[in-house]
Length: 436
Ligand code: UGA
Image (cartoon, rainbow, N blue to C red; front, side):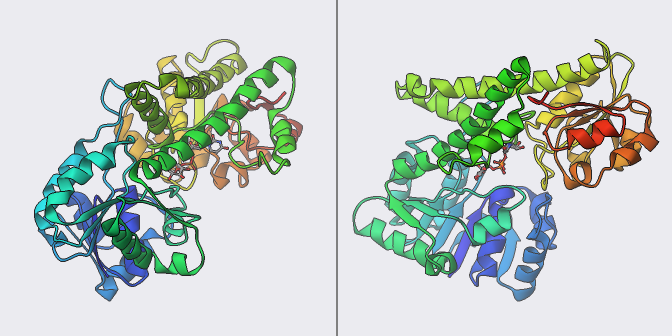
């Protein structure tokens, strides 16, 4: 099938490459010439395991190309729109500028029978409004939310755990659903749940999923706060409640909290939209979820201050991790970088390291010092803050080796990823988050 993918960021670039890998003829379109040049050379403009191989294979086969020219969308049967919907400056609501611009630029190239599949995370009600603009072209608008996780994006795109499609009622909607089913044939043939619904439900599924995940993380972080004043251990608590299948252990990792380009802005945009709909009380709890999450960053910084005797001024602090989570170079709203910046602001000499995200972190926070090598970051540190649980820090960093680099012997485990007993027996003062 001929496919166009408009927007080649984390979502669109992976989607385009994945679609080509399952045999479709794909053109990826983006306004950013720099990004298009890199993708056309088979280079991923961001770190995503498996993506470079998929790009190379697609370009080599001739099934995948990239351009800045929106006219290249002409002739495709299905047009995926995966542009960003960031938080509006100074507001909680989502900024739909890119979605509107992408759709406006696409309209002249749509033919009757074409399908437009919106993938961007949008406030509920957006698709219905966009559909009125698509209607005169004879094309059909559908909404196909994306649930991929950064770091696992290739796998999540080719083999998702469910597919959701919002369509208009009637024959056009049914035809569009059939076409989208054919696009995702490997997953559909495998029996992956394919949920065809209305626009509003499809839009809500996406924000509800992210709101639930954020709530789960903040729930366990709230328990960490209680554990901190009672001497309980939140990781054992999470293990114990996680054995209940109705609860489940995943996303009960207490620590410095969630960040990234999705969960924080999505729960805020959801709350803003609910307010517009006159239903703010239905999601008031999301404000709490957000607040609990942000308090964990304060807590991590406070643990470093306390461990260093009440002040970090003039102290050297190594921050292990800059990305918002491992297997990603994304530093958007990263708790790790946030903590690093705050410690720097309090007069600490902060050295940040990360296996993938140093370049991105340096661009946003040039005031911090960076080390590409973990050991260089840790050398002479008075304290170490583990802020992103890369294997390099959680599994492959022996306390005996750390002791050979620094005399500080203080480790703050912002992700509860280390074994406290191992570090303590090697002479380290260990502080977890919500652990005694
Ligand atoms: C999230 C969702 O998981 C995806 O399903 C969704 O498609 C995506 O947002 C999106 O909307 O595009 P992602 O932002 O890649 O994916 O990251 P997650 O794996 O969800 O992690 C989010 C944050 O939560 C990270 O900072 C992570 O460190 C933190 N986290 C995760 C915890 O603090 N504790 C946990 O137990 C799990």
